[in-house]
Amino acid sequence: MASRISVLTRAKTALEDITNRVGEAVRRSGVDEGICHIYVPHTTAGVTINEHADPDVGRDILAKLEALVPARGNYRHVEGNADGHIKASLVGSSQAVPVEKGRLALGRWQGIFLCEFDGPRDRTVVVQVIPSAATRASQLLERESGQP
Amino acid sequence: MASRISVLTRAKTALEDITNRVGEAVRRSGVDEGICHIYVPHTTAGVTINEHADPDVGRDILAKLEALVPARGNYRHVEGNADGHIKASLVGSSQAVPVEKGRLALGRWQGIFLCEFDGPRDRTVVVQVIPSAATRASQLLERESGQP
Amino acid sequence: MASRISVLTRAKTALEDITNRVGEAVRRSGVDEGICHIYVPHTTAGVTINEHADPDVGRDILAKLEALVPARGNYRHVEGNADGHIKASLVGSSQAVPVEKGRLALGRWQGIFLCEFDGPRDRTVVVQVIPSAATRASQLLERESGQP
Image (tube, rainbow over all chains, first blue to last red; front, side, top):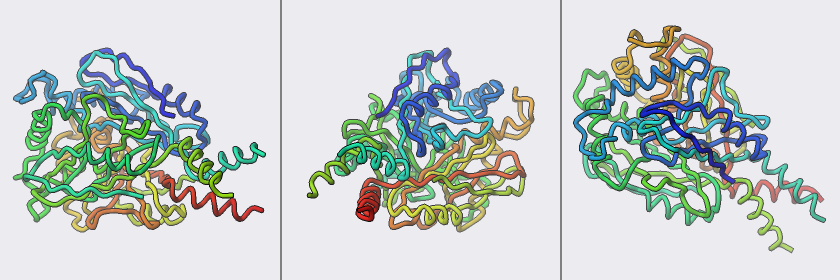
């Protein structure tokens, strides 16, 4: 079953590190091997994977997105957050990370970030873990062997 | 099995709302819980998820992409559509949306769009729905219980 | 099980065509129908799908990314590769391609590329193939019928 993570974002634009909470969702799923999908059901937020050792990396990402897609510009959308929508489409609404041995197979420096582009707000992240065939087969055989 | 959706795009660049047709593909798949993959097998088109209540959001996305990657520029590719290829890589060729209770778990304002960057043309979108373990286990147990 | 592909990148920024090697990983997986996930566990590299007939397309993509996110800029991250991190988030760390009849269901002109944004380096690409329900059911029924 999909898990939901609630994130209170801190500013108009922010990268919020959700790596540990996604990792917990993977553990709760009981999936040993497969794929973890991280999905943001919002239109002015996204999800990205990047370095989480140095917070300056996130600041550089946000600053460059702001330079390319400034908050104030010649936009048609009248709600004043057109830049947030455009940034969301550049970064994307979903990411997928392999799961191996029950854990996210992230690279050494990688973290998972909710990207806020029109905050501060309460946001939700949906995590869905899909097992690979091997996992499924063994789960099913276990389940069956438990049933006389 | 994967479904295919045909989309006739209307202009050189356009966002075509395919939300309902992807939703139909999910229903036809019979998957109750899992992930829906939306894939564009083209190199000058992409897929994005963003607001579909106000069409001005899509116009702003296309206008900003055009400002960042103009159709006429100093490109090497001789076919005259280098901008379309670059825009496709910025937006991406695939998106994945969770499926819950047999439906796309989109956010309230989200729609799924084919992004045309070198139209008008006939385009194809591939939809592949992957069930989560719970769904699979129950399907298999049903199937088995139906076989003496 | 996930496969790993090693790629030695040739330059500071480069698109390395890994289509054939991803295709081999799909064949080795034995999956007939499903989804192939291509994941880059690095923070200054990404993965994209685009034309691989004309290498000028890749050059145009890299040149435009360099124009939008120049290597030398006013960045906070002190390691000198802030541009590589930003480009990675624009392109994305993962892509997913449908698998049909045991093969990647790529479009006619599509290839899969590792995007190097801080090379030359040794990079790793993780390939995880997830079968669809139909494949799984038939594999499990085969497996069971082989067990008395």
